Image (cartoon, rainbow, N blue to C red; front, side, top):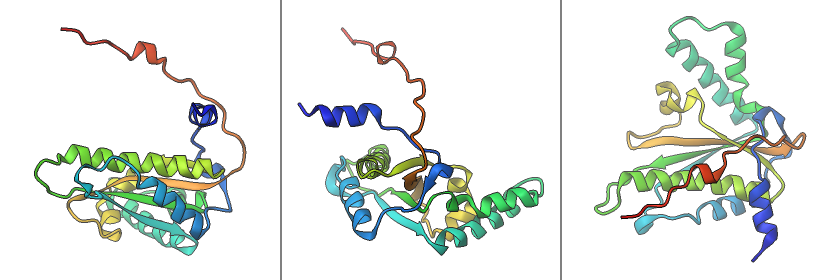
Length: 191
């Protein structure tokens, strides 16, 4: 038994996006992260997910899309402060990876399994990046569901954002938070 892996898993923690500093992953580190991320259950080998990377000026460019979406989709006109926050959303970390869930119609492969596979990819991205010493935060936020943003990301009707994963160097070690007691969540089925 490899206790170092168990210790790593028992102590991994998300880091808030605004606590993630440069550097983010290099191209070769990103390739390794994505290779590891892709080693998830994938019934019938459909690869029901894909990736979109945001780094450098692309983070600011998508921020303009977020601000336009906010203006177009909010019931009340957003404040200048809110629009500035949306413009800066992806600049909170040096690198953001979108994991896009793609439903691929295939007999015997339920949609739910494909969605779960994309979720597993998201967590493997986090685990691989964390193992390299990076901090991560896997979130969706309102932009994942925005029609304006979906259009800018060129998502098809069968695609959804499974998560935006912020990756960078942690500014500080995140504090531990309360966790559920697994004993309170476990039941044993019997006939």
